Length: 449
Length: 160
Ligand SMILES: Cc1cc2nc3c(=O)[nH]c(=O)nc-3n(C[C@H](O)[C@H](O)[C@H](O)COP(=O)(O)O)c2cc1C
Ligand code: SF4
Ligand code: FES
Image (cartoon, chains in turn red, blue):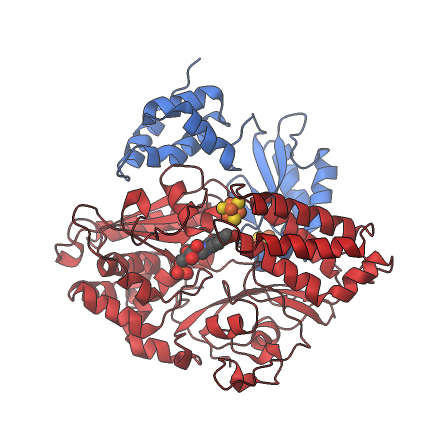
């Protein structure tokens, strides 16, 4: 169900919308002022009612995550905002930083107060120079007004916000890798447990949230937690609010759109995205960044069990299922970052898979053998198959290697690389066999018409 | 010659150090600061960062080699990154890259003879909705056509 909203994006398209005057004109900083006049537990309770599921990919409830933060006798706490935005196909956080950075700063103030922190680090990938500039600009403006610093809004609760930058490494989006990178180390993921809420940045209790999650916080307080949650068609599944949707690839109008949770892939592709470009038909869609297994338009939902979150859509096309954390997990894929990549039938699915395997091979941090070696093998094997030099044994080997990565690595990058691999080989089995038999599809390895 | 930061960047470093509870956390921002001045991270830069932050040089070198944006050798006056990942590839980044290689007379990863441009590929730069795209130095160029790429490269080659 497509229900457009304008909470996160109300300043998009407004001239000088990134300045504090514009933000305050639309009610900016009122919520932080109000929140700081309440208590920490009141803030966390409101967040729990909002059912705001993390927008960074894993979909964990933000209010619950905040409630894990317990005061420590000697150690400070930190809020770390994840703006590494490197998942292929994902380009939503960048729009918030460029067009409405004050919303992020206000979210940081409320977030710090809610989890008991006095400092927030926004980790922005280095390439996003305009985003960093806009965030620093917003921090300076907020500080000049006394919204940051020793006494935000006159309350004795110091808050500072800083921008920290990486230096080009997709893996630094993984939260523990990001923390190592923040501490000035190589961005290698850490074993969990301990989780960041116990041992996070600089060995201190830390909450890591995606940048959009934090940017949605002022809206939670503006509407009230429950009303925020009820914007969503999936409120009953504990998946509340509105969020940013992205669509890229072979659609006529790619871009970022805001809507209430519950948009379907059909809405996203044909309505928001304007339909398939270049006169093609829909071949496949990767729902939420490249780590989410691909879906095909002819797939239907099989959920005869009344307890399944998908039961209401039993027998319907997967394109008609509202995009939610639990609904998409039940479909055998993931919602991820809610930014879909659309492939038309004029391109070769093997080439698409090869493009992504090259990515994963390049971005593996190398700590775990199954991931480091496996992603290399996957890339080599699919490249060989694409060139028409592969065999059916190679196809089995891809399956075996991907299966061996799963569950045998330090971080979820392993699954992020192997799950889409298994999806591609299973769902495009016929294309792979045709390549082996020397009869590749008409697109012949092309990705672009 | 040992490396040292300009007075202006030295002041910036002091501000950077004030953001963190320890000196090590300034490692990546400081390497960026040095690279901005020096163009690349030489052994002298590594030594300088290690000394300033009171870290073993091996630690700093480990950091430098982990992140793709630290140049381990000199690069051209301008850097061009063509995004090669899926959303851009679906909108013609292959052709864009081939065009850049032909026009600049180098392969991805190389620098033009006159030292004007280093051409590289990049993995997804969070600009997939405006694909194909490339980054030139600190700026994004989106929704690119071959003609537009020509115009941009001409400007770089002319020393703009
Ligand atoms: C390989 C990998 C890459 C990730 N990249 C990002 C990213 O770029 N941005 C992000 O917010 N989360 C990313 N995540 C998820 C984070 O680890 C973490 O779950 C998230 O930042 C938590 O925020 P949220 O609960 O608000 O979603 C990544 C995870 C993995 C395993
Ligand atoms: S799974 Fe891959 S990316 Fe994650 S820690 Fe292991 S080697 Fe590094
Ligand atoms: S794929 Fe090129 S910017 Fe995302």
